[in-house]
Image (cartoon, rainbow, N blue to C red):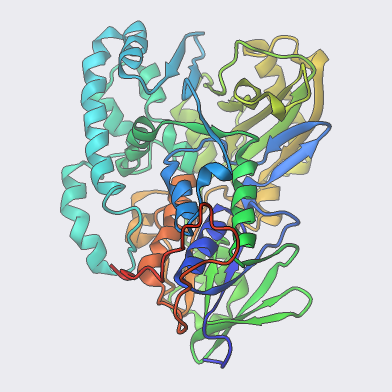
Length: 521
């Protein structure tokens, strides 16, 4: 190791995974530098502020809030001094093509009443489905989400439990064992789409998302998801972490088989003991590391990775309000499996679509000017392997989506529409540097989960680690935050003793923990 650099860690990317990793590495005692290619932190969770509106660019559903809280308490801070989470009720309102609606809520009595209103015979089936989801959660989340899966033994250890829980079935297949009504089958199986998975292909392990929401609820941050990003960046500044924007990494330098430095556009070289990448592993391996250092993740091996779908996202405002809306609305189209086949398998842009509409003014009026609404609507679409020309397709697709929303949910939208912008798969690929414009990294099918997903600890380059949607445990805010938590089990402690008190204001004077004395537990 180079003298003077033995306790420095470099984090590539300031998304949720990178920011969380930086906090945890600092608590371990590392000197940490965060390098972000864009002009603001957040990655997929960055913010667009236009015409008085605040638009969260990406994740808007916050579950398992304890994962955010513990980042602050880890360094002696009170998270309530930094951000404010509000519960969302209903979690989601689902609008079916026949005009029926379903409010997915956390309260058991209200939820059963919603189910009974659509299909009385499915009330008991849902109780059994929820019990099954809880058993999956108790294994797939509680026992495994923050554990590394980089050895075959790690996988073999849990295979018997996964088999007993039916992990060979898809999410839709398992839901259909308990639920007969097709509308309710859709309502209880769409959640894998939140992490990039096709409900008809994604292993039923991901049904744990359902119980995760039931257990901790769905939340929204006052000021938007970007307010959490801002709080994490503020915390990093307070504890002495250097966050650099407009600093795209061009190479991870490997010497004697080990990551020893990163090179930034413009020529700057930052030596370090270890590198933690929040960037897409497929891109990191093929673009940032010389092929001679990659025995396992060769270009050919990476090319075989099945990437998730992408997203078309529109951000728009209206010069009127829609107080009858829910905060989160799932607008289902006339087809379910057929549409998903178009998106994931055939990779064509279908004539129909299903949509997720985010209306944050329901929870926080500050997201739009007075008397206005801020919206974000997304549609799952094929990734860029489709060959679609999004410069040509985007305006037409936007018109179709807005017209559909006006007919089904937002009357008068056309005459009140203001401040419209979009993000397409092209932006995911070229701005966010995601392989094939995939919105969630590798698709979460069984053969790309746990041990079979990109490992948190690189098997090719010692000293290189991964966090984020592309590595274990996967996409979604809880998955990404848990990937940073895995670091505590795989990253060695720095050569210098860990800090006993993090510099800066320490909440109520509480000391930061020492180098996680139980490190490696």
